[in-house]
Image 1 (tube, rainbow, N blue to C red):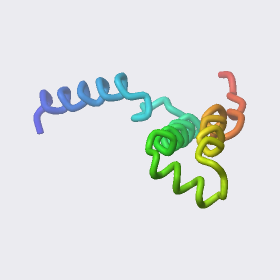
Image 2 (image 1 turned 90 degrees about the horizontal axis):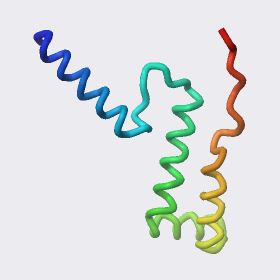
Image 3 (image 1 turned 135 degrees about the vertical axis):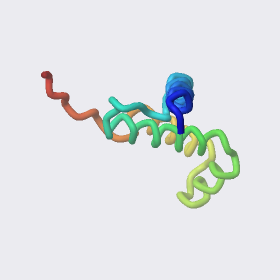
Length: 87
């Protein structure tokens, strides 16, 4: 692998990380990563009707109620963020 190949791969990775928030970056904390995963999951559940219907049947709730619950869980999917240590 040549230096130009490495530069090309790194520039593609930086472009991907800038375009899609969920792909992460080196400075991303574990909490931020977990929040992205949870929000992506909830958005997928809401966006795919058969999956939403499955959850509604499994929890014995209406589809509208499940959609509302998932939307509410998207606000703080992993609870409050941990306190940061100022350097």
